[in-house]
Image (tube, rainbow, N blue to C red; front, side, top):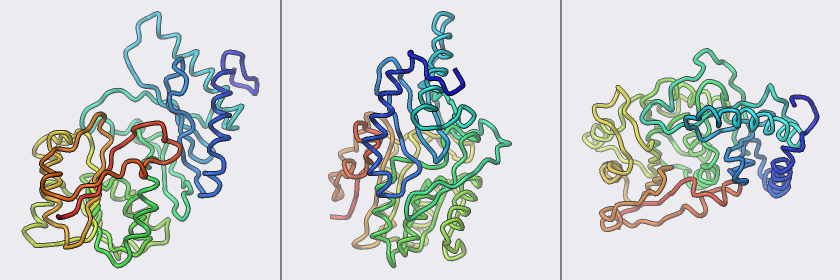
Length: 321
């Protein structure tokens, strides 16, 4: 099963991968994209996600505890996926990374799966490059669904002061800086800030011309407000939930987004724009936000073609009335 032979059992999956690949080929080639989603639970019998990163692939399973009768299904599926991915995408088994995406809370999803992994490599997303690591964490270090927003930020950031809160590995920061903005990137994790720093270097951006700051975002907003700092563009993409030890209180985006948005808007310069997004399923923006600010949902154009049949995120622009 791990050779070049595709089994009959994997034929349906192979056909779907071929169909999806054909549909995406022009889009990927035209835009210089090496990292993308090729499969999104398309076939009910194969409820997996398959992402391609250059010459490697990540296969996510929505995890659950399997009983003794169900456990062999996972092994069969893995062998069938290995065969189909090899046949259609030409990615050998040793470059396929299987992960179980369990329902988790807080910082668990950001804990290293393999803290010793140093297998960072760049993927192209013209005109950017980003470092990814497919073994160290559950996530790769690059949120694929933010691709259109990165392209947009590059076109609107010239001469702007940009604040990226919960910046993660800084892909949005890179986009804003590449577009001519001066960017302040804030995150609680020094590991991710260093990753962001390396992404700046990879994109031939001088990190010293920008700010990388480790802080609890909620505290940082208060400090910046006291200093009367202002920014022309603010990026706010908080985790759905976080109970990091570095935070005084748990963060729940459903519960806390009105406060996060309110405090962020306190730093927004006249005529500025706050970009708010969340991957929280079944998220509803609190009415108090739309009552107090000019809100426009931009989810439709910020979800890329390879995610077009999903509600991978919701995104909004928020401005003062």
